[in-house]
Length: 268
Image (cartoon, rainbow, N blue to C red; front, side):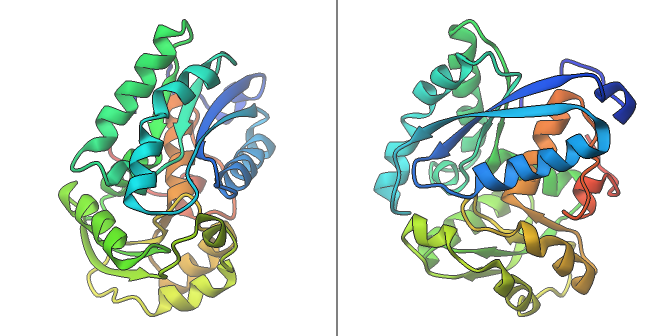
């Protein structure tokens, strides 16, 4: 994530403004353009500050290594296109494609996207979902976690290794084994509480309910958090949290977990 250039604003200070958020998504993604605007709608209700979303799409239909690599190659072009809207922040809503590039790949991805926007004359704060997830887990002090992914087992292992490499130990990881990205977006999030219940959580300090930008999870976050008594984070909530932070806006989002209610102690 780029450095925050503005001081954090109270909800009262946010009430008179508007922010534009650029969103880069896989072409077959149907979830982030639903969950992120919903989260920011709730933020608007709490603070009065308004947010609009402006998307660019990178081609990707199946969650396999070749298509993931090809999609990452399009990130700069997408950043240039979405920055034409003079956005204040760009959320690169991609997780496994970045993690498949190897250790620390989110840093380079964010640099490339930020550079493309700046070269286009519209510099913007940049957040990647891959970077947001690992940084948010570290920020809330979650050194050990259990995760749920929709991926085939080898890609889940890629995600697990990436998170481990960022200093957060994955105690257990569930793979739902769905290779088609559209089908991932159709998964029933009502099943997530039962799946989370089956995770091995001894020693866990948080649960990643959806380690994927396409697997719907927002409606289940609050219920799982209350049942398990652990902070629950998803790719979407971590992306929202870091985007708000990049804009200097404290989170004030209800019904999406303690992280977005601003109830967790967060370290820089």
